[in-house]
Amino acid sequence: MKQIQLFTFIVILFTAASFAQFGLQKDLVKVKTYQSFDKVYPGTEFKLALEVQVSEGWHINSDKPYDEYLIPTSLMVPENPSFKLTKVSYPKPHDYKFSFSESPLSVWEGQVYFGALVQVDSNAAPGVYSLVVELEYQACNDMSCQAPTSVIDTINIEVADKTSPVNTINEEIFKKIDLSLTQTSATSKEESDPISNALERQGLIIGLLLVFLGGLALNLTPCVYPLIPITVGYFGGQSEGSTTKLFFMGILFILGLSVTYSAIGVITSLTGAIFGALLQNPIVILIIVAIMLALSLSMFGLYEFKLPDSLVNKAGGAKAGLYGAFFMGLTMGIVAAPCIGPFVLGLVTYVATKQDPFFGFLLFFVLAVGLGTPYLFLAIFSGKIKKLPRAGEWMDAVKHIFGFILIGMALYFLLPLLPNSISGYVLPVFMIGTAIYLLFFEKLANSVKGFKIFKIVFSILIMAVGIYALIPSDTNSVEWKSFTEDALAEISGRGMIIDFYADWCIPCKELDALTFSDPEVIALSKEFETYKADMTKSLSPEVESLRERFKIIGVPTVLILNSKGEEVERITGFVNAREFYKIISNVN
Image (cartoon, rainbow, N blue to C red; front, side, top):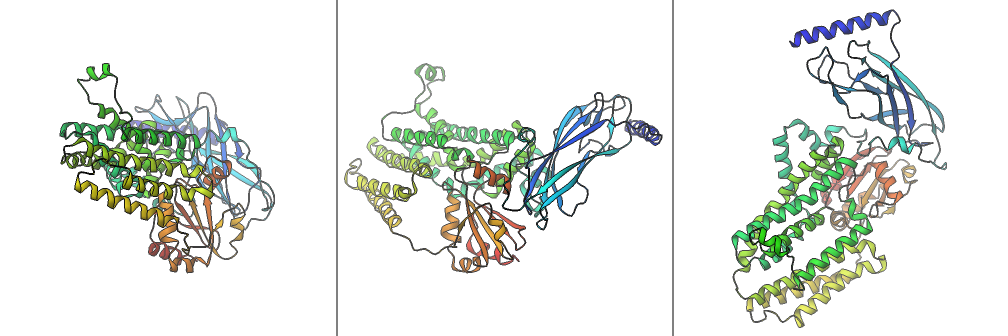
């Protein structure tokens, strides 16, 4: 039957081509091109939008038709010394059942929008250039197909010098196209997005297994570390030694964690937004701080999370801690969000390009299950530890300690909103104050010798850390300058290092403390122009512009440019000094 279908299609195609030879080819597709800026700078990128109008009753094949013999639609920019097409974004096609085809075909009809990212040559002189945009397609209706053809449109692009202002135009058009996660031409897709490629090559089951394993690996990232003591304190303090209750509390904790990450997956699939970007919104930060403080008050015994009695009865006597465990997981999922490792960056890219909310939900749900699975066992284990001394006073004392930890986390999240003049002192002073309180004012469980020793050692330790943090640091580091729009013009035969960071990003602080402070890295960095780009408040227009321009998905991201201003390496996540030195030593 497939042979008959193929033969029928070829006959139709041949007939259409014969008509075309006699000048009966119809102009069934009209295009109009829009650009994203009124002017562009040499060496930068800009977006194009192609409005495609297919005549009523006709269709054109998508860029990925289901059968090999069908001719795909392709957007191209003919060879041009001043402009290079680096990415094409095709609209989502739909299936259409033709009379000559037993199975649906992937097509477009009516009005659709294509997107493209174009690189301006760094040597392009100021002036107005003509840019030709070509769309190759084949139009069919329910009875016949036209011969493959193309339609072109020409748009004038003004290349300006660095002193001329550039304005965004045609915003209503570009809202219909998502190019926010486009990869640059400096690295191939195979090299720059291995996670997406791996998921594309594997089936759904294997892909979900890879995502689950990636979630397990996220437990090695610094932002997840605070979950460990909180989990021990929370579950151990409320377990009453019941293994069954501990198990169900752990399950609910994982489900709460999964709800948070699944929501992030859906948002990512719909918007392509930076993972964890909600943490940059002052309102969201204040809400998180309030939640942390509320959790801490619960640790101090002011109240406990409890379902209404009517629901408790209907649920068969569910204990108060079950709802609290779910709420803890819901909140703790946000704690790990700022740690954007390479795996999560690849997953974000993959989900955003798919633009399928259910698929985004599924992948991030499995990711969260992988992240939360160790905490199921930790919850059970922590409960057994707390079971050793039966006295309730000992458990209350432990909960108080973790209440202080939660307050410390609330202050940590609040730091980006505080003035720089005091932000460096808030946590150290709090740690010292907490240590003094635990040593001299907290009397609970002092009769338990083992716990008293632990409390004294713990208090002295955090006091020492707090005091050390207040000592002015003379640590050497790379000599950074604040990144500006004109920075790329200053390369002048030297390479460039751009560190995109945020105040709330723990791996960013690790880079500063362990990598950028290394003497060999500092010495070699003097051969580069070195800049820091602050992404803390990414909702601001300036940071949004940086993110769009450099395709920054998460922080930390470190771009390494060669002496020609070309991106040769993109580092996401923490790398040690030796690895970073090796990377920049190979840049010409």
